[in-house]
Image (cartoon, rainbow, N blue to C red; front, side, top):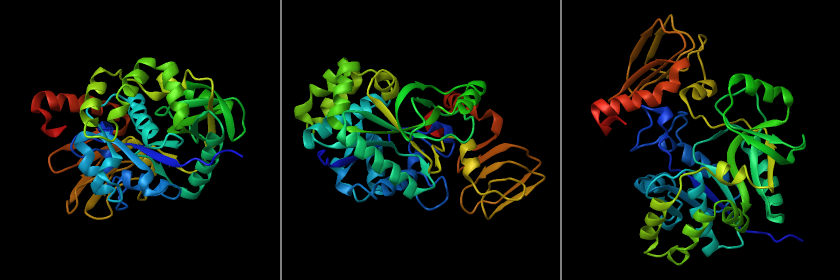
Length: 359
């Protein structure tokens, strides 16, 4: 009988969320915002979702050191030592390597579930059923598991996973970065591809072995400071490691190269809601297909537009088609939905002319 391993959840919460600017800022990024208007931040919803299977003391949050107090504010169930602080962002591989090495010291026989902090799931029960299947398989085998989402459209904003069979649990053939529309349509027609959720499940020992094999320099850096994990010297040691560490994603650095990668398909109303456009898709709309506040927003001859306003703000909007309108206390952004990929350019120009105040 396979060993029953204690499950830990690692929440990656270090991103700035620039695609949700001007609502998401460096001092208050997307994962700490109530983007959906349901009274809960993304990180709070993530914690509650995984709490159905994982005890509060078995959570770790990896975030920027500037966000530690925000994490504790949104997740008061956690203790300060459960927040692992990155001095600088280095993508997901160093983030996961940090958490895995920390866990290897406190719970070496553990099973890791790694998740972004800012995803949306409509069917919580369906998600937990899929998670249970993944933890059972990963706990019994030396594999690197991920969850793939059954695609509902040829989405160009997601990465894709090609599976070897149509079974719910399947070996992975390959990973593909965000495709163009023509390629995405071909993926959907083939029936072999799933959306890449960015959620991973594996034994702590399995991911450490994979990092040692495929990212040996990174493995050496993090394992060299093993004595400092959980001590007063951890912060200084991690700062030194991160300044010398390569910035690379776990997908590119490990998952695309490993030969023991499996995917479990899921169909539980998942979205990363990474853009204003994806928020529009998941928002309640009026009869003119406008996603807007229930009160204080008056639209005339306006269609297919998403509008975000501060509380107690009144707005009159006339004559827009397919637009994004976001008003905050200090920034107003109005742009066509088809051009939201330019948001990074807008931020850079504002920063060049105004400094960091509005970024």
